[in-house]
Image (tube, one colour):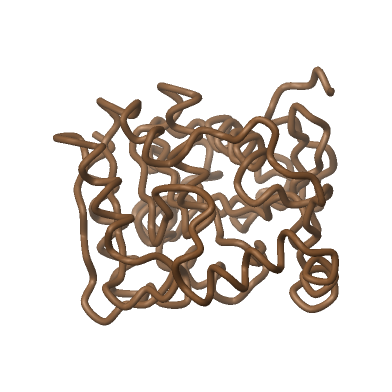
Length: 286
């Protein structure tokens, strides 16, 4: 296991703004505590330069206050169009960090489908804080939704608000056809080949040991961190008992939005919904 800090930059492909005078994104590989290189992008956000056009760099602007860290769903990655679209909407509300979970895209390692991915998110959150942001909000979709919940529970005080979109409440759910297909993909050798060559996702062959904290159990540990649970009433993966379980476990510090006509995760979250999430986060994070 590496003894480097969670947000250690392993290799930067874009030099920091303070070195170049650029106001564009910064792309780098972060190193997790267990040695995985995580492909990550920092975007200082449109609001920085619209509100403070003469600021020489993002790190010196008063609008450095808020940053979103976006955790994508299974088989996503930082370059997928739906991930970039979500980031593009959120950048109107603050800075944005996106990254590819292990086993996805250009990141190293293999996917553990929500277990060790908490380490990837922790590295991204630490990196985001390093830019001087006073408020950090994690926004996770599907698998990423379960990861942001567990991260906030296991690393209390590191984020100021949490948004879980289309997240499961419990593990090993097989009650829908898409989830039965996903379990085949993850648990069978031929399924993992489809994941690697068809979906650009490298999946670990080992079972969870131990089984990670369930999302619904993580939620009960989040208070007083504000939580927003967002779910579509046409989600084909997880029916509405999942978000309702999460909201019930959250109690007074949680809020539930059931979106009419919405399906699953990033593909189903339109720009208007993502903008509402941004507004909620800006208010809830204090």
